[in-house]
Image (cartoon, rainbow, N blue to C red; front, side, top):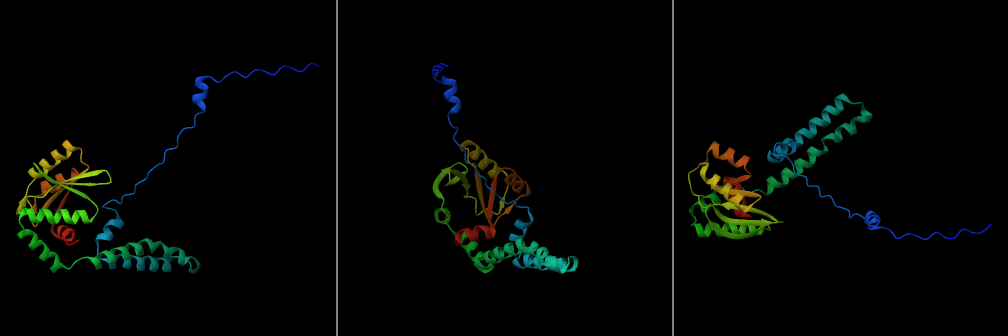
Length: 218
């Protein structure tokens, strides 16, 4: 029987070639951010010993309700609270005393603008931010880090009261520059409820009191 002639291979069409081109893999980036109102976030802001009380409560409940051979598994349910308690204790032990905080706030209140802005610049630069003086309308400083921009309004830090209008101006600047966040420095002044709600709803952090002192103390 005569051998069949080899079939000639037809060249692949452009469509076929395109079909076999490997598709580059996309690397998924997942960012985790704890909600400010979650239980663990609340515990981090609470006295450290509260977390350890919860650890003890979990252990006691496990001992009372579970057979002895399963007690260890129930008690391990308190481990996350133990971790949070350790973190809270570490943070709180490193925190400056109330007297030191008040002294820093009083010093900041007495500073001229040039010195205060320099102190803010030094503090944020120490945290790894790029800091540029803006001095344009409501914006006094511009912070950049990891491709994110935050606008800072700080010249009213000595004011006794803070209403919503300067926050509206800051938010307008954030929109104009497509900034990801804003910071309004309120010093030791009182922020109105309307201003506080506006800041919360528009991505603006109000920096005042102990938080400002801790920043300046580094």
